[in-house]
Length: 340
Image 1 (cartoon, one colour):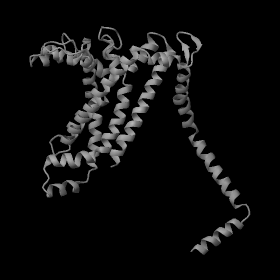
Image 2: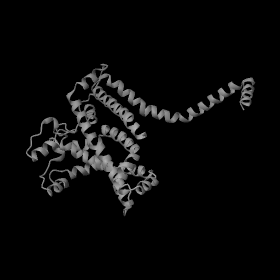
Image 3: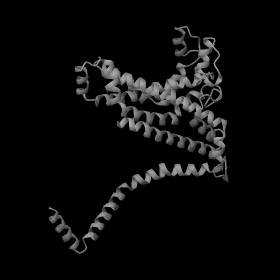
């Protein structure tokens, strides 16, 4: 066989012009592929990459209402030394920590319950998924009514368990501080936690994102082989052992996927925060007193209220670097566990 291969190779090399014909065919195929890809490449370049590069160029300039010239990295230096930026980054971290792990845990539990043999399973799946297809702006407007300090349902519900009326989206004090006050315990400023206004937004976000993650977990549960469960039960494993030893490890890739996209979405969240915080009647977008001003809302305020296009673009690119770093860390740590 080696001799036959060698003779064929010798014949091909002996044919005059054969490599040149192969090169021409390869070039022609490449040209045809680029021709088909040209519309998509043009749209992606104009509407995706060009705005990114143009925003980076703006971030290097002293661009307020008018362009006042190049300042290079001065906007980045100012942002990194700004108290408002670090405060908004802290609010963003609170928002991510309050939404990502809680939503994933609830979604996993609900999906596991829905995966059992229960009645009206299709109806229950639809009900859980409905909030996700609802417009964020419309949902935030409804939740503003729910958290209304005078006529909202939230105060009515907590009133039944003996908790007094709260100002919810207008309350700048930390949630741990409020709990400490109720128990007559003094809570230091560093551990007072996110404001009640931010907690209200976190509750609304969990409600909105839950249905999507439930569906993803249901897909993951459906891919676990039934023979694995049968073998474990035959060996005498309890339902709790089956859940912790089989179900959760098999769902590791789903946890990894959802943690990555949910963290990115939490750091980029804007609509629901803007709608609820703008109607807090205390401090405008990011209120009350800036306790709901995430980095994205900070960027919006720099563009829309302060008219500082260069500085706002610099803050946006710092956020981009933070998200990229977090994603790489998650991919390095979580990806290895998901593949195990």
